[in-house]
Every structure is written in C-alpha cells, then in structure tokens.
Image (cartoon, rainbow, N blue to C red; front, side):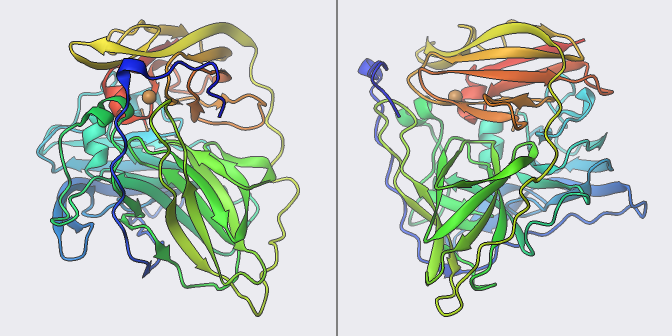
Length: 458
Ligand code: C2O
Ligand code: CU
C-alpha cells in the first residue's frame, strides 16, 4: 500500500493490537447444519428460527453464554434455490430487541430488517420475514440493531442461494465463516469494554473462529482434492488477507455470485461483510496446504495484523493433486447497467465528538446524515472518497454495485485510506425496490458510531 501522501495518525496515535492467543492444531470439519425446510412445496423454503442465549465454549471446558441463532455459532445455514420464496418465522428469545438483515439479498424493502422499515422484535416477540431470493450466491444474515454488540455475541449465519443451472465446480463445497472474539485466556470469557484501539479501529479479537470453532483447523478428508470454499468475513472489524500456502487458489465468485471467468490469485483481501468463492487445491508433492491470513495494515500507524493459520488441508505427496477442470466462462457476461442517473460524492471521514471518535459521511453523523434521493430503474455513479487514515469497507443494502472494471456485482467493498473508489450502483426496479435502504461502513463499531446513511428510492 502506498502511504506516501497519507497523514500520520499524529495525536490520534493508535495503540498496538493485543497479541493473539496461541491455538493448538485440531482436526475437525467445516460442516454446518442446515435449517429444516418445513414446506413441502419445492419452490418455498419455510423455516423456524429463534434468536436465543446458549452456552458455547471458545476454549475447551470454559462455557460462555453467547447470543445465537438456534443455540449455535454460526447459526444454521439457510439454503434456497434462486427464485424460491423464503419464509422465516422468527422468534426473539433474547433479553433485547433485535432484527434480521439479509446481507446481500435483494429483498423487498419491508423485509430488510433495519429500523427504518420495521420496529425491532422485542424480547418474546415474533416476526415473519417473507421474500423471494432473486440472485444466486453466498450471503449471510445478522441483526441490524446494536450490530456491534449483537453480531459480536454470536448472531450470524450463512445463507446460500443455489442456481441449479450453474456449473458444478467442485465435488466438495464448504461455507467458511471467519470471525474473531476477544476472550480471556484463562477463563475463556469474552472481554467487554472498549479500549482506545477499539474506539478507533473497531473491535478485533485475540481468538479466530472458523465456523464457530478455533482456527488452526485440520480438515483431514479428500486428500489432495480440490475444494470449493465460500468464505464470509463476519468479523466486526478484522480484515482477512487470504493466501493459500503450498497450494493454488482460483476465485470463481464473490458477493454477487459467480464471476464471468475464473481468476487465479496469490492472495485476496476479504473485508468485513464481504464474501469470496474460491477453488483451492494443494500443489503436487505438498504434504499439506493451508489457508492463511497475511499481515495487513488497515490504518496508518495501526501496525499490521499478525499472520494467522486458518485451515490446513492434507496434500497427496505420492499421488499429486491435479488442477480441477474449470470452465473458461462461469456465466454469461453481465448486461450493461441501466442508463446512468446522477453522480454523487460520498465522503467517509472521522472526527472527535463528545470526547470520543465519531465516523462521518459527508461530515455528518448517523442518524443525521442527509438522506439520498434515488430513482428506481437508474444507475448512479458513486465516487466514494475515503478522507480518513484508515480503510472503511462500504456496504450498500438492497442493490448491487459494479466495482471499477465493472465485470462483477458486489454489495461490500473496501475503500482504502485516502483513496477514492468509483462504483456504479444499479437501482433496479423490482417489486419492493422502493423504500429506505441503508449504506454504511461494515466495521460495525464505525456504523454504530456514525458512518451510516440512508438512501430513499422512489
Ligand atoms: Cu451486513 Cu447493514 O449489514
Ligand atoms: Cu469504517
């Protein structure tokens, strides 16, 4: 990263990150349970879902009371086919009001789970979410009330929408949710409280979770075979700069489903809220390959994160793994976005307010950010200008945007410190597109401390 023109953090010097806890390698699986579909109609997925407290253990024998969907972290996976109607009978058994936001799914506005469109479901209350899923891809769901606290306590789960017409890219497929928690190394209990670093950077933990269990996981199956990993960064603030050591990785998809063509990569940055769909395989003769998160400095003066071992895959030194046969085209090219409407500048910044850090959009602090008026059936150019010395991952609800290059659809993208990124937002005119849609930094502490705005679509 080029920091040549960036300002030093100066009097906002950022305290160093706390060291990570050492975690033993352990054998395990990436399997996640799936929510039971109670509806016999093949085009309707109807489930019951509870938010509830439950005991989980981050360290063996050290139970912790977490907030969960259905008693586990992550919550069970929601699975549907593209075009299905999804009905979720939600019950809130938590001691606090909550909602569910379907991150990345183009739901009708009334189903988006934000307080601009629904009252939070009170303790003991119920709500039925009911919508059609228009796009295939790997999505996720989480609360949109006090999200910095509620997601951190364990409320998140994957939502995979499959298109039966898409090519089968691998015989094995896993959804991998990456998270971190801050826990006491002796008691195993989460540590509350915000320190000075958290105030600025959002809360990063000292303990990495892969599908709810400790990282440094060895997946001892399918020796030497290629696997498809649909990876979701559900952490409040941690950036994962992923590399596949002793192996190769090809990106086949992202937030908005499959890419047009496979892309071989040596590394990829995955910011909070973002997804990547990867095919990975050990290189011939490697005894083991591993998914790692490389050091990354996401704020000037913050220091780089330490390298992390996430998942190990056994190789096949005697029967070398071969590259999987991937089609040249994964899907037809995207149609051009609809006729351009207007160009906006969305400036991300920060300042001191009431003795603490506040994060701003066009110099305003949520909920006092001026509402953007937008029109269905247009596309808008957003020049997102990051005026801060730290990266901010921007997420837009309800609509996809095209990042520079334009060949994919995304809903979450990193806006690097002191850089401007041009996005083309596609305000489609599907039923339910009109209404109130949020856009915000997906560092959840930043969103809750001001960096969230609303777009009103008519
Ligand atoms: Cu994943 Cu508004 O959030
Ligand atoms: Cu941010």
